[in-house]
Length: 627
Image (cartoon, rainbow, N blue to C red):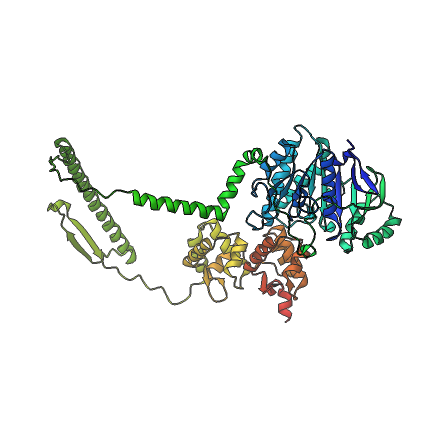
C-alpha cells in the first residue's frame, strides 16, 4: 500500500506526518478546512488513524460522498447536531478513552448539543482540557500512531490569557504537552487557525511544518514572520510576505526546513468528501445529505452509556416524555385505588394509673429541699454580717469627710424582717447623712506648696512613681510640648499607645490627679503638673527645628512611614498626590500606602484633602514664626 499523503499535485507528505506537528494559518475561506479534510482523507486511505476536535461543527461532511448521496470515509461522529452518539462537556476523558481503545477514526463536534443549543466557551475549554490530558496519558499505552487535528486551535491555546483564567491555562498546558512530547508516544498534531497572531507562540514554534494560506492582517502576518525565525533568511521575508498576501484561494506557502526540506507554493487538492464547511449561501437550493445510520454503533454506545444517560437527563424533550409518562402512571394509579373501607368499630380501652414518682424518690426530694432551705438561711446570716461591716466602713468615711474631728453623722437604721420570723436573721440597713467637705482656701498656694502637692499625688521619689508607665509617658509628652497644648493623638503617638480606650483612661486619671487639664486646644499642664515637670526637667523637650522634628518623629514610625514623612516635608508647603508620594517613597502597595497615610494623619503630621497629601504646618515652627 502506498502510505504517502498526496495533499497536492506539488507536494506529498511522508507517512511519518501522522506523528509530526503541523500548523496551518490563513484567512477565512482560503482553504484551511479543505486542507484539514484532505489530510484526514489521506490518513484514512493509508490506514492511519486521526481524531478531529471540531468547535465549529463543519467536519461531518467526511462521512458523505462529494454529492452527498453516498458514504465518504469511515468516521464516527460524536456530538453536534449530526452526531452518531451524543456527548456532554464533562465527557472529555471518556471520549479520549474511546479514541485510544478503538481503531475507528473520530470527529468530536463540540459546537452544539443535539437540540441545537450551543456549547459555552467554558464548556468547550473544559472538554478539550480533559480530552487532551487523558489522550496524552492513554496514548502511551500501545503507541499506535494517531494524529490530533484541531480546528480553530487558537481558541484553546491563546497567546494572551486573562488574569485568573486558570481553566484556559490548564488547556494550554495540556495541548503544549502533546505538541512537545507527543511524537515520543506516536501522537501528532495539526493545528488550524485563522488568527495566527492569537495562537500561543510556545506551541506554534515547535511545528515541523508551517502551511500559510492567504493572510493580510498585519498582526497575523507578523505571527507568520515570527515562525520563520531562523528557518528563512530575513532578506527574503518581505518577498514571502507579499506572496502570502496575494495567494489565491486553495494555494498555500509550505515551509518545512528540517522535516521536509521544502519551501514552495503548493496547490492543495480539493477534498473527495462532502464540502460541509462551504458558505451556506453558495449551496442555496442544495439540500444537505441525510445523516447516515451506522450498523456498529452498539459497541460504542455501550462504552459511552453513562455519557448518553447524562445527555438524556439534560434533554428537554426526553424530560417532557418522562414527565408525561409519570402523569399517565399517576392517573392510572388513581383509577385503580379501591373505595375506602368503613372505619373499624371502637374498642374500649382499660386505663391503669401509674405514679410518676416512687416513695423513695419522694423522700430524696424532701431531703434535698431541707438542705436547700438550710443553705439559704446560712447565706442570709452571712449577708447580715456583710451589711454590718459596710456600716462600719461608712461610719469611718463620714469621720474622714468631717476632717477627723470625731463628729459622727446622723445614722438612720431600717429593719427588714426575715421571712422565717426569726429576729436574729432580720436585715438592718443604716443610711448615713454625709457632711460637706471643708472649703479650700481661695488664695493660690505658693509654688513650693504646689510642687509638694503634685509629689504627694504622683510619688515621693521621682515625682512620677505613683503613675503607671503609660500614664507617665502621657504626662511626659504633655510636659515636652509645654507651654503649647498637645492633642490626645499626638501625646499618644509620643507615648507609644495606640488604643483609644486606654488613652482616654490614662488622660482621665491624670486630670483627676490634678496634673493636667484639657481645653479646646488640647492637653496642658496644671500649675501642680508644671511644678513637678520643672523639678524633673521635662519642660519643652520637643524639638524646635523642622530637621529635629522629622528625626524625632521618624524614630516612632516604620521605615516606610518615615520615608513618606521625609518626602512630604521636602515638598512643603506644596501638596502631593498619593501616587506621587508613593512613587518617591518607594511604596507600591496601595493598601500599605493608605495605612501609612492614615497613621501619619492621625499623628497630626499629615493633612489630607481628597487625593492630595501635605506635611503639617506644625512641623515648620520657624516658618510659622516668620509669618
